[in-house]
Length: 186
Image 1 (cartoon, rainbow, N blue to C red):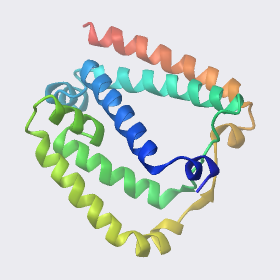
Image 2 (cartoon, rainbow, N blue to C red; image 1 turned 180 degrees about the vertical axis):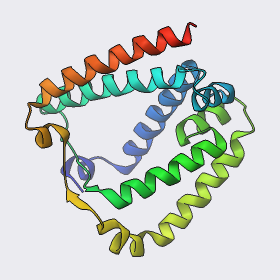
Image 3 (tube, rainbow, N blue to C red; image 1 turned 90 degrees about the vertical axis):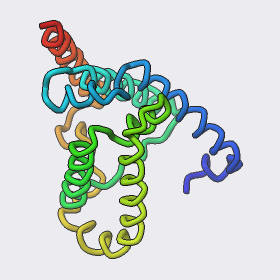
């Protein structure tokens, strides 16, 4: 555990988690991505609201985290790149999203706005989380080691400055959002 976490009382972390969780859910709801028909529209490539919200969150997060890290306000906690574990986790997440049309955040926001169809997804999420917790030790000894490449970040792999890559990717993502806006307007 890092020093910042150890110096904060547990109740403060819980309060901050609750406050930021409510804000996140509110923003998801206001962005329209807690609505089943919007999420299904994304899966059917008919409504790109979800993609535009996610792309804007990626741009803001990318710039914000790198800025705060550059100013010494937050450390970067890079998770190891493990091809098998990342691929398996992505497949499980994708299957759950395709079957329910909700991800954990949008499901919680949907339930918060009264969409009772999200209850099934949340129960599935809880059951899956419990099963993963039971299986995590054996999985980390096996699948968790396959394709372990260590802590990789794209700027280091490409041998480019972090800010240069963030500005280039941010520009590309903003162009992608503009294209999606044009597609949504058809």
